[in-house]
Length: 115
Image (cartoon, rainbow, N blue to C red; front, side, top):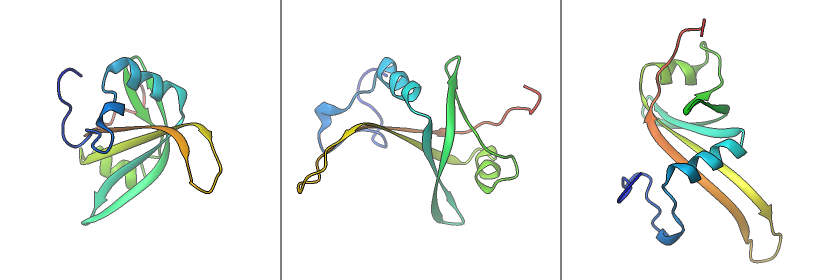
């Protein structure tokens, strides 16, 4: 991504820490396995942890076609995938933590089961 990122994914609190280039995003996706998929159902926010994989530049999330989440996503509803890559934990009274987080917003497309 070149230039200014869309407001939905732009880091606001510490903007110098934000990274938007494909190499960084792909590295985070490749090092983790679980992402949280968020969407809206009947006006209420829903967030579900799901396994995912990145294959040939495409992101696949794992789920049953019969599940509520997959049915809603198959309709092309807007969704957000958040992937957190923990780099370590520091336990202290200040609650300091080291992590990287990635959010992706897009419409989801389903593919035939025979692929």
